[in-house]
Amino acid sequence: MEWQGLGPSPAQDWPGYIGRFAPSPTGMLHAGSLVAALASWLDARTHQGQWRVRMEDVDTPRCVPGTDLAILQQLALCHLVPDGPVLWQSQRGQAYQTALDTLIARGWAYPCGCSRKDIELAQTRSLLRHHAAVYAGTCRSGLGGKTARAWRLNVQAVQAALNLPRITSWHDRRLGWQEQDVLEAVGDFVLRRADGLWAYQLAVVVDDAAQGISHVVRGEDLADNTARQMLLQKALNLPTPQYLHTALVLGANGEKLSKQNGAQALDLQDPLHALRQAASALNLPVRADVTDIDASLAHWTDHWRAQYAPNTPIKA
Ligand code: GLU
Image (cartoon, rainbow, N blue to C red; front, side, top):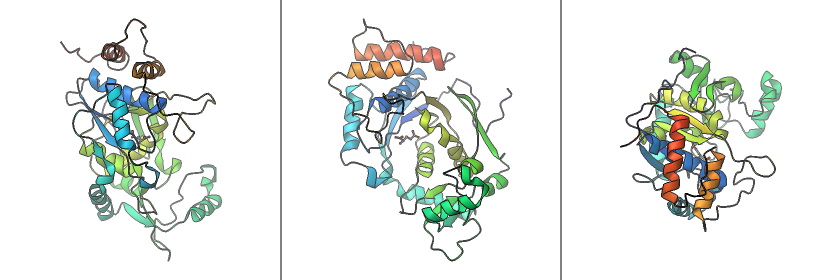
């Protein structure tokens, strides 16, 4: 297919590669989050690029004090050490405010006074009722006497002003061609929440750009956010990274492993064992005769390269 997406072409060569792992310190790393850490690290090494770590601690009430440092220790035990300083999103409020102000000044963000109940009510009245999370755009043309609570992106206004197609499409390095009609799938999404906290979508887009992230490698559960993030990148005139969404680790019940459904923190008495499990989840071969962490990481880097970046030169 001819390349027509909003994102960069799926070429493999990328001289200024900067990747990242962006855990939320709401709990320690578990088997699922180690997969995202390992995959993003392997991709950075494959491209001879840098690997950054960003603590996504914007949702302060859900963050557990001390977990950020504990996660960095867990990573270090696995020999996954960030290149350059760690960025904490809780210290980035000014940058997010500047981005929101830019969107407001362009007429692309509006205050929303809807409560959760109002949103549900509007959905039942409209054709959107089959899409549980879709915002019907109630406050797009004014608050109608309500008090402003959250800020939302006016998706249609951005698409019209920038001449963007209604369907946002991109090439995912693992999933292939992807597309989403953001307005139909989620509607005008939140940039700043009713409780005053910054929304994940805005924070991630501002920080990926600020850190010069060229490649995002993360779990497939986040693939659905990519179109929203691409629209925000366009609206803020920021570059779009390349994306690769890895397969998810499923728990015994067949559900995605997550802190919310009680995934156990990694037992790092034996970091190589944990890394081997993560590598298996990524379809990378585990060699019983390689019993050293660094040698294992090097072995998996070769396999990762063959799978996802076959045109990348191998470091001499
Ligand atoms: N902080 C998010 C999480 O832990 C990851 C965000 C991202 O990689 O874009 O699920």
